[in-house]
Image (tube, rainbow, N blue to C red; front, side, top):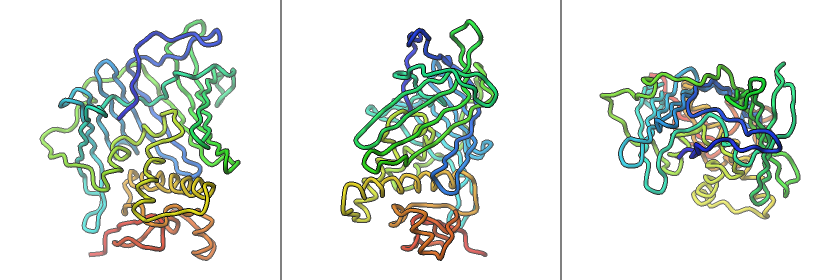
Length: 330
């Protein structure tokens, strides 16, 4: 449930050694989703300890805290402390747990992509800093993604590398358009962490993540979807259950690709909004595969986070693609 990292020495590529960030580090980041909502930005902080088989990821200044402990139980566990809003509570602190399995054990989640398969592309200035740019292409079906990572290293040394920027640009060959993109800006990278930072709060009752079960993995470890290098993410895989649940059928393969893309952006917006500790919570409803332009037409011209795939009542609306639950006034 997190990317497995090797501990082998970095391999030279094109005369340069692939950047190595070490087996332990602390780093801050900001995730940008330009195709979701009104251009979502989400801050996070990661502590990573490969040899200790553990990591911690906080979102929105520790509003949400996630601990991935690979040595707990037989196959590891993820613990998450997060505020939850329901029909009866606003931002109530909840404790969730997801246990690993033999087929899908819990491993520490890195904040940086695994650079296996990346190649040196060029030197380039990024935010006033001269960086190495490393690039990787992947393709699955009609999805063709390009991943780039901007890093620096001390002059004359191969490591430790310092990350600055990560970017994914997705191109769909059937739609003949760029239909996906996300970026991460890194800061405050350090090759050290504190050991006690990985200890989840004790003396608490941790419960299973809320339904639907197919969303448990993306709820427990959302960062995994953004630092992997596969065109098919957990968000993409949830499109199948969505189609089955709401009996979706599309007229052509092209429409299927288009609707899947809209669904993925809606799902990302839903989960990012829920991590932001707002006074409402969001969820997917039958129209999550519609575009913002379609919703703008239906709603009379404008489409924002409060009117697009979002429902603003305590029940699930059939006329908006995200179901939002909000506490009724007392």
